[in-house]
Length: 267
Image 1 (tube, rainbow, N blue to C red):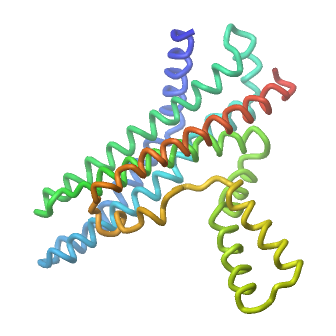
Image 2: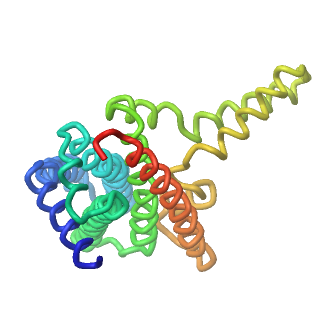
């Protein structure tokens, strides 16, 4: 079983290399880093240089989240569209093992890219004579943990709908959208409008906020770390909390995606 899982993961790595996705990431990475680094070359202020570093690091981590989701979506959708899964599943490879190997391959690539971004941020800090802050490590780990949930969620959506629809659905219908709706209904209720319809809508938004996946489950607790890149001793625990949330989300998405995959006609 372990050998078959390893063989599938290696096959997915080869598939990623042929897709040129990693090459596209490296080109965008170099372009974004180069353009964002130009202002710092002409600044003498340490504060301005730090702000440039923080901006570069933030942009790259956001890009990593989108790219990680694309890894999960691409590996599933490409096999579904090419109808190659029937051939895969007729070999001694179960749908559960293939789906697990696809997930692990996407997570491994995401981990590698997060390590590259972190190493680049550390190199920029040293090159610009800035202290290497612990927040760089915290944000990188938090981004990687968030990417685990995003990969699993996009893989689930891809088994249920067309990839373009899956991306649109994930971008529009998310926890932040419904949290904003919940805050709006709460503000209106506090202003004196306590109609039954508005209270039902408030409950609906509140429930949907907890149902839909969150990218960063504890972003309101860690937002200062992202701006200052400083981590207090008690804040490291939020990484464990986020990992627990991502693990539960990934397990649920894996089970649901496997169920959807087994019900398709190609199996």
